[in-house]
Length: 84
Image 1 (cartoon, rainbow, N blue to C red):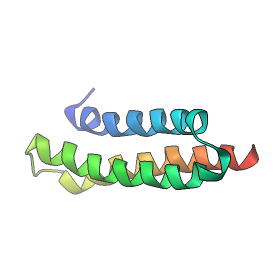
Image 2: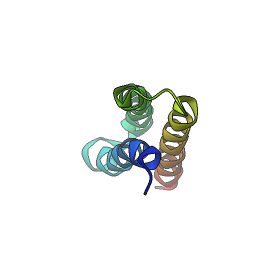
Image 3: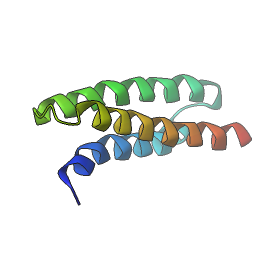
Image 4: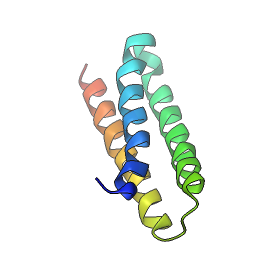
């Protein structure tokens, strides 16, 4: 596994954990609010992780992959929660 993928996975995992924890701990009328807050945290975490690596080669691609993956995970969670 390359270091580029390893720099993206923590944000994806955090988004997945948030997608699981949010419906278990909040009321249904607050799910969308907390999912969007989780995405905002994922964006900030993505930049933090990529800047902590201190490598400028591929910064935009890694950041885009990290944010895009988080968006897919949280959008899927929103779709599942909308069906409940």
